[in-house]
Length: 98
Image (cartoon, rainbow, N blue to C red; front, side, top):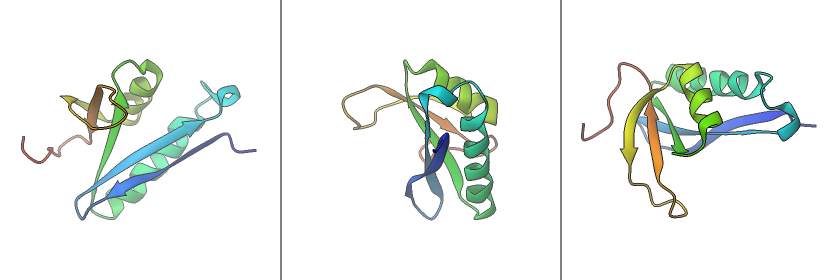
């Protein structure tokens, strides 16, 4: 049974957006953090910037992003299911257009 998984939703030459899923019974045990850290390491090694996009009301996911080292780049408009989301980028890198 899978406890958690992370991967890349989309990738460009410079950016890669991470997704993460953690089984309800595995939450709060560090599994989500472990798979996100592994995914971030692979993306950074490839020379791209990892991005983490999260609905503004998903506090557990926001805490996970920040615990791994992502920094809040502010609210952005994303066309995803009509839900306001926040963008999290990797320290020392900037979003295009900033």
